[in-house]
Length: 126
Ligand SMILES: Cc1cc2nc3c(=O)[nH]c(=O)nc-3n(C[C@H](O)[C@H](O)[C@H](O)COP(=O)(O)O)c2cc1C
Image (cartoon, rainbow, N blue to C red; front, side, top):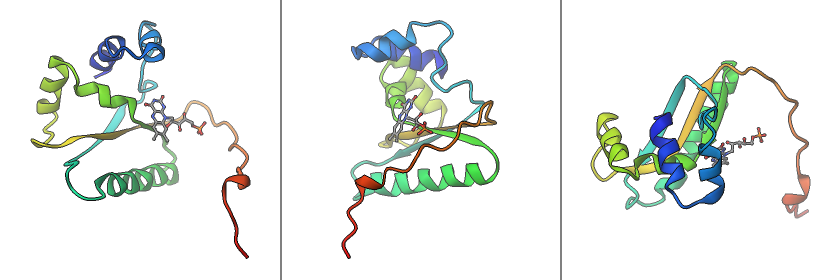
């Protein structure tokens, strides 16, 4: 999956992704050993909201178990090539289902402090 994603990043035409992927040491999943790929039938109503709510629950559950997690959407490039389409089949993604997001999971090798909350992005009406 690392190789397929890197190949597709290089051929994506998105310059910053291509530049990143050209680095042989770059691992788009941050060397995480486990990935959860969320796919869905995008013709179903509000499906992205459902999936991202599920993703958020996975991120919170991971944190509660002492795992690090990383939500990703650049993984939509995973299935763009012929190799990617084969991978999609191998992974058992049902026909008609498309990529929504990926969650990389693993044990953290660093624990940076939480960033300060941006309270200015919420309007409180009293
Ligand atoms: C919707 C969404 C998609 C993201 N996609 C990617 C991605 O494809 N690749 C990546 O390295 N980080 C991606 N990120 C960023 C990371 O998940 C994470 O939010 C970022 O590293 C900042 O983490 P921090 O706030 O803990 O520093 C995405 C974040 C969001 C919210």
